[in-house]
Image 1 (tube, rainbow, N blue to C red):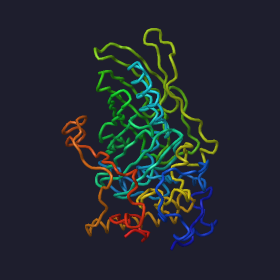
Image 2 (cartoon, rainbow, N blue to C red):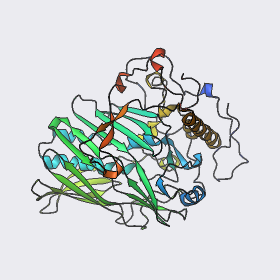
Image 3 (cartoon, rainbow, N blue to C red):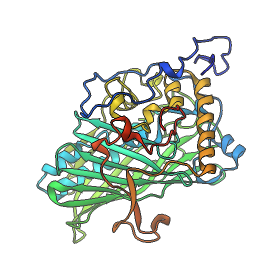
Image 4 (cartoon, rainbow, N blue to C red):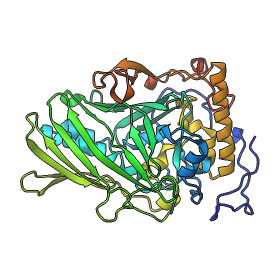
Length: 457
């Protein structure tokens, strides 16, 4: 049972103002109940979180790194719940595919240059959700934690699972709701490097793999490194720099994108502290330019835009606008008080009653510390976070930790031996999730109670 908790306030130390105590576990919709077999959920999407985000905490990522000694390796150190957003890292991965309908357009395009430009737009759009993020990071998932989302309005469904703890590795699978249309797969692993002032987050997982079945094509691309400048100062800025190559393995076309953020110029999203009022969109920061090459290396297309707003197709000869490939959706009016979330992100942790019986007990929506933070109970969320982390350590010591359920290691011909520290294999979706075999009490056997609710045996 959870006790009284300080409510969010306008000052980080507001201990005088108290909120009503958070409800007991029994009052929170945290565990699956009666079985259903259909996957359609008739529910009006919410437009705001249950409680506004609390003020930024006066602590920098650098001070936390100094305290823990974690200056390199995997950025999986335990951080206070006050530095989190009420989403897991699995849900944050789902944010990258808000604009997956770009692949519907790609599947209909006749010209391979049009198709690769649209896949490149998808790669760029995956950064846009971070534009207004303030002061916090997603929760590190428990081993065996999963997350799913189906967006009938956008025509896709997504499932992800944390498959390794040290190092932190997550695997994801996206597929079109139209049969044999497209899939996206990726193994996510980020390594951090601290250089005395700046912290670099280096993508070290598998390439993103897009199967465009409508055209019998496979595309791959990797993300560019992210640098947190002046990480020790508490007023960090963020830049994405480097080259991102989208390659069509069937036709040989490639699109080389250059992310041109200026180091320390002020472009960024204040992800680990700093002023809530800082916003992007000034000057020439966040620019992206790209060139499309045919199999012979000839320039056959250009794209240009910004990772936080749009990408356009440019005529390579005249420099004139051909079309706008992608435009970011309008930001919610209450974005500043909602952790800088997009409308898409606001909906990710929603848990309507009709959805509860459809989810496995490992879904991120059932995580109690995350749910408490979403409702504004920061102190209670911190206590729950510590409890869950302790339970995970105990399971590991006892040899009863959760096993990977929906992904398995398979040879990957697009990931060579030794690439990014890999062995030529990638965590790959093995199927079966959307059949929902856990529906019904007997089918829940084998699930580990990773959230410590006592409901899964």
